[in-house]
Amino acid sequence: EISVRDWSSDVCSSDLFNCNTLSSASGNGGNLFNTDTATMSISGGVIGCDQPGTISARNGGGLFQTSTGTLTLTNVRVQHNRVSNNGGGLFVATGAVPLQMTTSTFANNTAVVQGGAISSGGRLTISSSVFSGNAGGTYGGGIASDSTQTNTLSNSCFDATNSATNGKGVYSFVAGFNAQSNWWESGAAAMVNANVNAATPLSSCPAGSGAP
Image 1 (tube, helix red, strand yellow):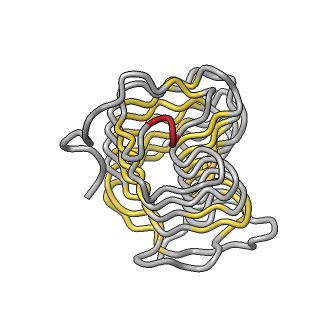
Image 2 (cartoon, rainbow, N blue to C red):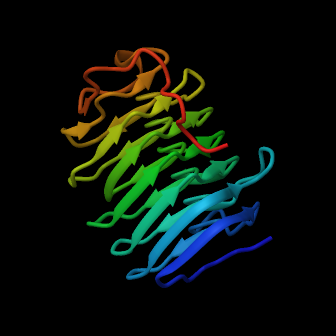
């Protein structure tokens, strides 16, 4: 097992961050925690558990990104993480922090309150990624966003196994979340709220989406 709590301009390739845990009452970032000014790039590998585990943190069971860092995920699988609050797979703190993610998969992550896969207060740019089996509690089975930044989600797939009371796929507390050209297995109307622009939905999940 590897747990990295403080990265600075590092690149990680094809590693496994497996089932680490923190205090469910106060700990953030069960497997990875990226500091204020650090740049973290992860390519390949798995963040999480091989099978469903116990609650690993309060926020960000797989990864916690602070307010001014930079995070890039490419071909990463984030799975089987659980938190007692927000961001089962990933928590992005409020601010201008950018998250860029492509060809990655969030599967079977759970948050009690919001954002089964991702809870974000920062700027999201996500493409060619897959969200499956994530549970967001009250808001956002896949993604919950309260960010006023420009958020773009495209060519990604949300199957019917994502769940939340509001927004099985994506829930945004702020109008203008751009989620055009994605596949919504249950239909966009059933998977996003009114603040999410899910126009021009795709008829199927694009080939090559997600991580192995």
